[in-house]
Image (cartoon, rainbow, N blue to C red):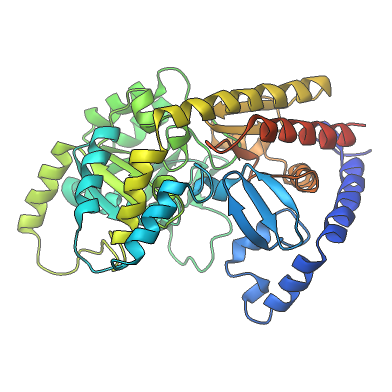
Length: 454
């Protein structure tokens, strides 16, 4: 009996994959040769191991990127809906950011002291995201790690709570998951010798009863969560979940950290401002500097006061927070340009309109082909899921994931001139994304899905 994956037979998936692979390889002789030569200098032929995770025979080599387009060394142009997996969510090299980088490059790249841009950015962050006090790091992983240190320090509690299937960068203690109701280290971790469940508790997203039960133990310093689960098969919060989560954390003296690194797609102030969330700690990485490595983390006035009290009593010495290149002037130049000139209300309006067009177009293709899939959107972030929905939690999201089928769709889209994120079915619409780019993606999706559904 032929196995069915997402309504498509495995044999059909294999046949389409074989054809699409031949098309891809034939079109990119220069990239194939370059990757082969690159293997002499890089492990696996790429400078970061996950670049091998793209669902292609080999990654193509980018020649240039501008706005919402990529061009590879074989001269092939693609409409880019991956946008650096959110790092370039507002387009590649927005002019205000590129200009700011050029200006700052003549003034010095790092000197461990603030400048006028740094002063301006602090005010801009407070005005936009609502929290009064901020710090700057280099990645969202760093920002989350540092914010969790603050949470543990001021609560004098050792544990954190994460949601099963959530992702917060490379923060070690968040890599816990539920398997058949038991907590365990997440699969696939390299070189992890610790039992991470000693410092973290995992529960299902949208399960407020499980949250209450865990917090009642009195040893959880902080709940860290995305407002929407975005790392694999997007899961939206059910009505009332965030209000109940905030009430539960306050009841039990636990801090709430909202990680908006992906959900900044929602609006100028992220999901937090759009839906009136009230976090104690707030993290935003990736797009905040337009592609320059930078992240920010903010804290409420109460958290800031408690942190200052803690600092006044702690032993002197390295705090374990901060890196030498954090809060450098290049970051501030780029962030100021982003906040003042790129991440505007008008830009978000443009992104929202085209993302809605994309959502509707993909949903129609799915319906026309009689598939039990669904499409989810959070502002400018759109995702198709090869399973019925909506999904309620991380376990359902994991079960809905269909890597074998999804990889063929990704490859087929690339062969038809469209790039989406490699690790799941995420697509972003930027201010540089035009109606013709959206329509091209819908047509490419229709073509490959119809080919599979024959």
